[in-house]
Image (cartoon, rainbow, N blue to C red; front, side, top):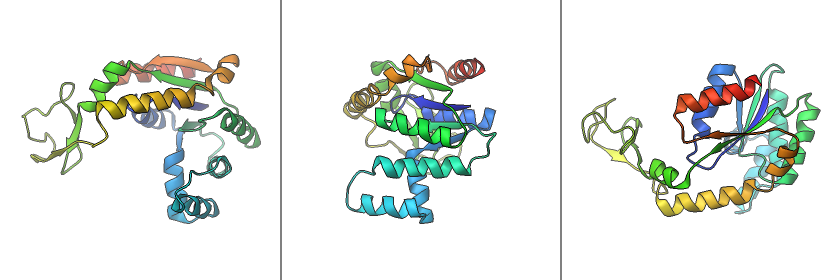
Amino acid sequence: MNIILLGPPGAGKGTQSAGLVERHGMKQLSTGDMLRAAVKEQTPVGLAAKAVMDRGELVSDEIVSSLIDENLAALDTGTGAIFDGYPRTAAQGEQLDELLAKHGRTLDHVIELEVNVDALVERITGRFSCGNCGALYHDTANPPAKDGVCDVCGSTEFKRRPDDNEETVRTRMDEYRAKTAPILPAYEARGLVARIDGMAGIDEVAGAIDAVLAG
């Protein structure tokens, strides 16, 4: 099973991808993670990507495709892939089809986690974590049992990401819509797109994704 998981930052793609890896033994192929790994390992693709990034330029479609190619080649044939952050354009979508075919695979589903922007703003701006152990909290949905004290390690130091603010969240949402709009029509025409309420509970979203995969 090979799927594309779509959704704006904060929609829960990371959480749901981790669940799919755990429940179905799938492999998450995140362009950001793959780039960092290739650069760290100094693979030929990683060295080419590093040279581009060091110049302050965007990594080309060719380099990203090479990364996907490398990672698909390393995957066991029985292991499904979750594409996260790729494709972002119609051209990349065509390249992905070619790469999947090259490795004897097909794209089975494109799953979009839909969100309510105002609710997403509340979800993201309320996030914070323990400055010591990294335990995650939320102002209203998941506060510490004792105000100002981490449930896990007892630390009183907490931190918030500087980009977890309303303006940034709304800008990210606009960027997401602009980037995904071009790739969806082609997949919709092929009957591959399923939309799921990303604002539902984690287990409920996971169950809806599993129902799509079960067909």
